[in-house]
Image (cartoon, rainbow, N blue to C red; front, side, top):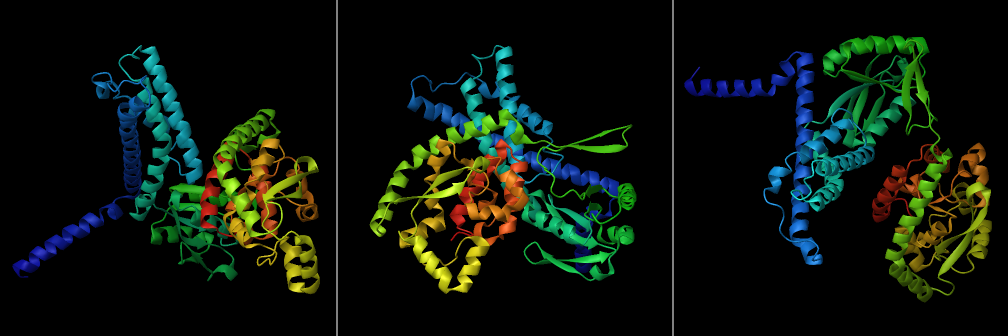
Length: 510
């Protein structure tokens, strides 16, 4: 071999050695090393968020607050950075306490936990300053500002950072799904909708011979195949190098499922079991065990049965609704003027809807149709059987000729529903909840109508952020029931934030 070839071979060999170092290590060591890399990466992201929060807080305290009020002198206590060295440690400790370095959550759930952790860190920090009697040496205002900015920076940095880490393969976690039936497909769809969690399905296993050659399409066109049966799991894991398993085979008998999970647990890095318990509430479920640790128990909560939670939901509706109303009054006035100029008739239309307890109320909307809309509809449905079938199925027409020019724009942007804020203030509706329905739609809910009657209908809800008119009516009902059975105040807040993005994208609106 010539000298040049020798040098090339040496460089090539060292490159391969560096690239394959992780794959050649023993699996337990490789697993621990991967966890360290993941932890270090996410920790770096959080430190970046806290660093930006501290910088923004310092800028606001030194340059903005003194300009706004003379109560804030521009000078801060000397050596302040040295006196606040412990503050990032308190925030990171609170994040550790919430399990945000060891568990994977969807973005909105993790966002809520980050806000909870930041608030806990803020309270601990103020307590330290008070108990240590260092109020004159440490700016309490600066601590408040750091907390305020961290509420935004921590989720924002996590969202961006984890997506970048997933693209780099650091946050990505490859999994095998045991079960290629409907449940397994739902699991893959759920993971596909939550790329933030970092799971990537590389294959499925199933004993059903009819599913042997089944291929699923996920992740923007990626094809996932059935790689064998349950008994082939050891060989498939060895071939793919994937030792994280999700068991989604609810059709298995209980003893067979337990035996399968016990066998997998001995050889896998992690095992997640999806039980055959569809329909149960999932938010706030607590797992426990009793009878000599042999029995698993799930404690379910009915959040909206609590008077405290009902009060919190109503208080949130009144407070946030009043703020939104004050901010949007000029916009609503402009829309009302545009509706009046565009077509003859009133600017606001009141329609009978079903509310809490089955009581009717007048639901307000900006008028988007011609004044004689009902007469026009009756004539259309009588003359056109296709439109009649669409109306009987969805109680909507995709290309409704009764809609005015301004009305079409209002519907596309959902601005026609802004007057429902007055229904919220009056206590007839909530900011978030099931979609308000007319009396003819009660039969569509069947036995689920009893859930609908438990709460006030919402200005927005799961239906609005899940595709709106593009989803089937039965699925709308299931979304409403899921919301009612899994309510939390944070769920309402996230629905409002996600509604803004959906309305901006105008997906499913007509």
